[in-house]
Amino acid sequence: MSECGCGAGERPASPEASDLLEPVTLPSRSRGVIALVEANCTSCMLCARECPDWCIYIESHTEEVPAPEGSSARPRRRNVLDRFAIDWSLCMYCGICVEVCPFDALLWSPQFQYPAGDLDELTHEMDVLGGWLSEAPAPPPLDPGSEPAAEAAQPAATDRRGPAARGRRGGLTPRRRATRDPSDSPEQA
Image 1 (cartoon, rainbow, N blue to C red):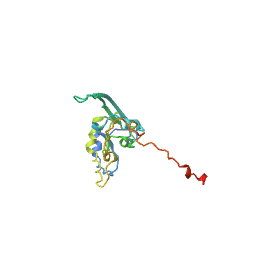
Image 2: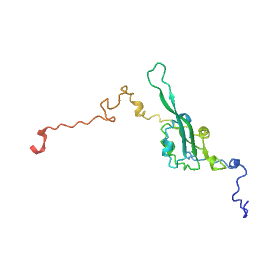
Image 3: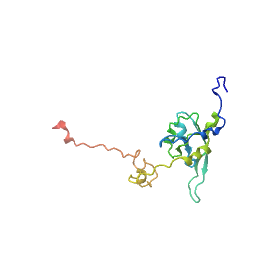
Image 4: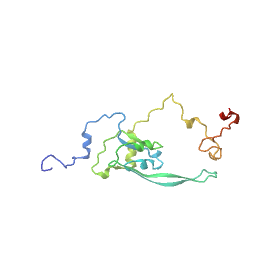
């Protein structure tokens, strides 16, 4: 105890002190912590690159996926996630990582109480981040009256040579110059 008797500098008696607090009802759109869907993560590093605080740590390695039996295709390579961690002492809960993830591997969880006795305990690894997935709300259902996505509505292209070989540049058809009839010229009128 300090000289003034105010208890400054003392630690709580136990880390379970947060359990004694009354439960708080949060608004529906409040941000808690970020949950990780490990199966969806492809180690693309977009979340780590876009994070303004650089609080996301990702480590991965590549693995060779063999080609199917009897196929002349060469084996593919894919990234395998080794480590995914978020340092909550640096995170400012902006949500850029959740928005930029193209595979929906990161979700907001309503959990907001995660007591730690030391700053090192605020770096949470894959197992802890994956544990919050059970508390994350389900995504909203699709609108039954909405149109299907443009990718789903168009049939898949069977020509694999690329846009240039199919006579298109960047998916656009080349412009043709309009030929002008000299008799339509206003100067000759």
